[in-house]
Image 1 (cartoon, rainbow, N blue to C red):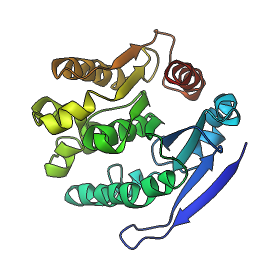
Image 2 (tube, one colour):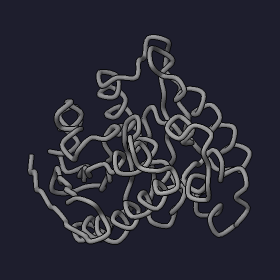
Image 3 (spheres, helix red, strand yellow):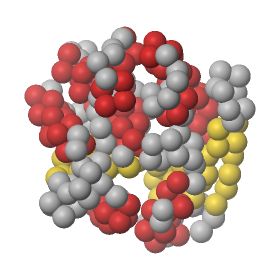
Image 4 (tube, rainbow, N blue to C red):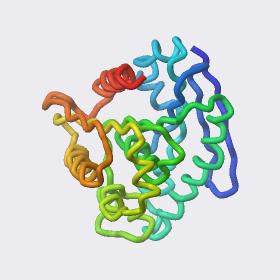
Length: 242
């Protein structure tokens, strides 16, 4: 399996950012790590090995990016009003640096994916910027930010909380594009899967109300918020969509 690394130092981010590319061909996936983790997070916890056959056969190539959570939404000391602008700097990095980097290898539609906080980012990016992406596989994500910010809200929090902005989205330009996407949201009902389970059920209702097709797959009570299950789920969904 081919592994390549690329790093950036951009003036609007507080530290360098890295991306690993796993594979040589196939559908491109922009993969976000678990909360506050790095670009090797999926490799270190065995998720890359779990999908190795898809990578080695040239069916997919994964681009795993560093998180920016600790510098934005989940910061321990950053004042609340500064977290949204910090996150928007990360958005700028993904759209202006990472997406063109991925497109230098392929012109196929880019999927997003991730686990836990990474699933939040995967879903948030495609719902905010549907014209940039072809689909999403989000595993055990939250879809609004009150778990990190409490009752605090501002414009940036609103527009980065799909459960908040999607119900009010009436622009046909975005809705029509979202209806073309392949959207998969998955969650278990076992240990540590709240509030992800509640958020996923709420997302199912919102998407149905907006006429946006989605596969919302709720797994059993034995399915925990943990890597062993994500290593089962991701290959399962890849097999279905490729």
